[in-house]
Length: 149
View 1 (cartoon, rainbow, N blue to C red):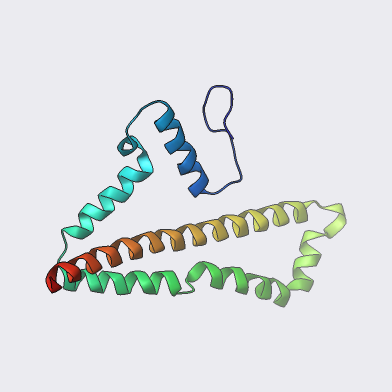
View 2: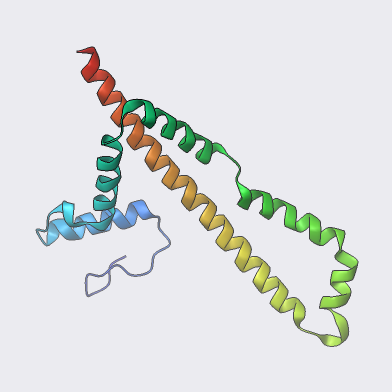
């Protein structure tokens, strides 16, 4: 969504749409696409990986696959925390609901906030791993093509 000033307003759409809007705005203002921060960042990653020899790049690729497919600490914490709370549910209820206390509100707010931020962080990291994997695959494929010619 764009406001009257042409600036992107808050949107629940993903990064892909936000990049599209930046590209569209740059095109409209006759600015080069190379000036867009996200594209500069990807180009920097590409240049770095191009400078690395293929054998090392393959090892980095395997590490990135592990990162993308690994469950990681965040999903483990997200799935194990409720079991921990369940284990101590009686004590937790007594503490949170004692004599009209509103500690439960703080607890619920903190728990949902931490849970939400953890999930966002987890998927953000997985998406970056995917970007690195695609870039590495493309470089290795191009090198293989050049070698076979």
